[in-house]
Amino acid sequence: METPFEIILRVLHVMGAAIWLGLGMSLPSRVSEAFNNGQDYAKNAVKGINRSANIVLISAIATVGTGFGLIFVAYGGFKGLPKSIHVGLSLTILAFILSFVLIRPAYSKFVNAVQNDFSQAEGFKKKYAMFSGIEHAIISLVLITMIWRTMI
Image (cartoon, rainbow, N blue to C red; front, side, top):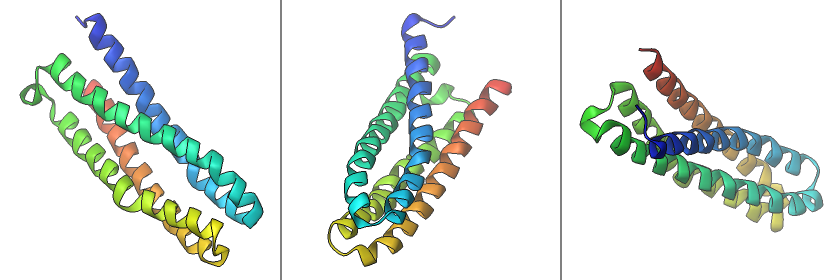
């Protein structure tokens, strides 16, 4: 039987993952919309996109943190984990690294281009969208491993 603490961790974990994936999936289209409407529009739009990106980052950290909490509270550590959770955790760490190594730098370069040399923005917009799509595919695979765990 799950303890109240475990239930709270699980709810926060699912909520964090939903925000990470759901809000995160909207960001590439918002970046494209900002670019497509010109430099003046983009300069204002990136402020809202930045806020959303920060929420995505916080939710990703919360998801990883509550996931580790669940590993120890629900399973007693890594030895008790099903293989699907090991796979999901590995993919989550990969997505997290991808975010810091490729996605955030591409977005920062896009914002810099919007502020200074708009002619450079399109290339960074495309890189950001591509890297974000890869992250979303990875997180979708993580979701499948979590559902698969409950079906086995």
